[in-house]
Image: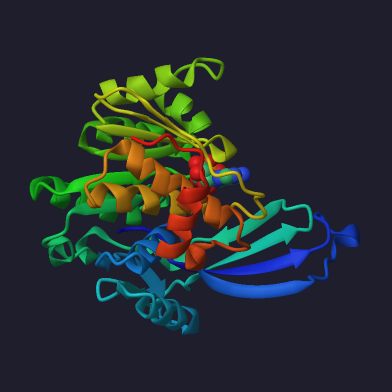
Amino acid sequence: ILGDINVDLTLQIPAYPPEGGEGIAERQSHGLGGSGANTARILAGLGLPVHFIGKTGRDNWGDWCLAAMQREGVETRWVRRDEAEPTQLNVVVVSASGERTMFAYRGANARLAAEEVDPAALAGTALLHLSGYALLQAPQREAALHALELARAAGIAVSLDIPAGITGTIRALVLPLLPAIDILFLGEADARLLAGIGSDAVLDQAAERLVEAGTKQVVVKRGALGSLVHSRQPRVVSPAAQVEAIDTTGAGDAFAAGYIFGIVNGLAPAGASAFANAAGAIAATTIGSGAGAVERQNLVAMIGNMDIEPA
Ligand code: ADP
């Protein structure tokens, strides 16, 4: 997995924006975050061997992140340390009504260079997962593209998760990559934007167009509506789990982990989607990324509660 690793500093405040510009939080917590890191730790927790490629600062937060990743079973020997930029610290403000406001400085993450991606990190792997944030800025963008090339040359499958809100920025870069992507995760609005069709167009059309552009599986995350997969096979529509979402931070990262877990274990898109929606729902019902809560037992229990027709 190549992507961001950071500390999420979560403050729970009664209302946002705070009155008078000064908010006293009712609770403070910090945890490991970063889209790529979240997906990595969930997959490691589910028992898959996971190597993480990324960068932290050479600072205490960086040490803390690496120790946390290692405790969760992720191989961190390919993580570089930056001498100039700090480890990313995300300040996440969650209001009592569940709205989330995030402030982030990408720091060391964006400084991963192509030459810092060791081809040995990919040796023997079944799949390279890229977090879309890695495509935002150079030199991390070149590092991600380099890893993608290495994977393709070695016949390794590639997945890309595009988080909400950045598709406009990376669209021109992603379009020519579509034939090289085996599994593309993205939201509804992003699917339409990437496919270049109007916002009122049928979602299936957008996903279909991305498959025609060469991506093998287009997996659309639809929040409380679940997900949709388009590929060369008939489309797969999957329900979300019925839960009371309290903080959807990390739901997309968990969703990707669940889907990848299913695919790597040989499941078809319908089965992988069940794991994905269950993992996303668990993350959505946990304050913070929720990655620590997505465990095999919880996943199986969540799938048991979901409205899925037997295959
Ligand atoms: P992102 O976090 O990338 O913006 P979504 O908000 O679509 O993506 O969430 C990703 C996945 O998490 C969804 O496809 C769904 O499986 C799950 N999820 C998110 N919100 C809810 C919800 N309110 N109820 C049930 N599942 C949810």
